[in-house]
Length: 116
Image (cartoon, rainbow, N blue to C red; front, top):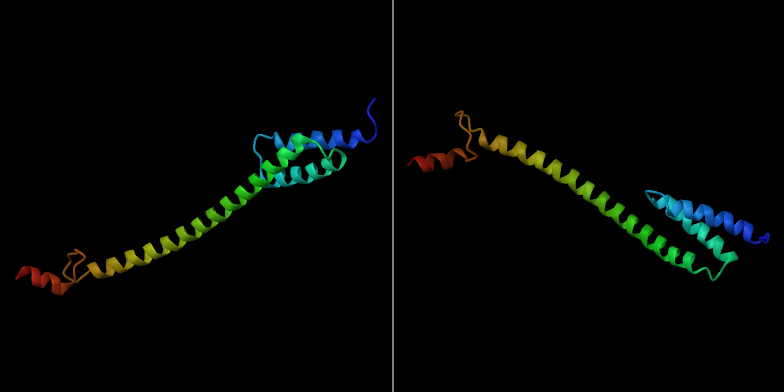
């Protein structure tokens, strides 16, 4: 028969396994699993599996946080770049309209020089 001490461990271990074996591990579920693993280690300080999972969960969380920051920066750069491109395209349209109906992107004085 199981001792009363192992009952909470068994329940925590079940919950832990549900979290880490989900189809998609999220940062939130990894953090919950990490907390549960600490509680499990209070009852079973030599649990090798839990210790290995803790390392992996920390690495996973760190990686996901890094990726999130990189994506956020990339999104900001994309938005800034798009705004700059919009500004540049407006400038190009203004430069290419020289009043003679032709648009070649050259200034009027350059066209005159090319004709000579």
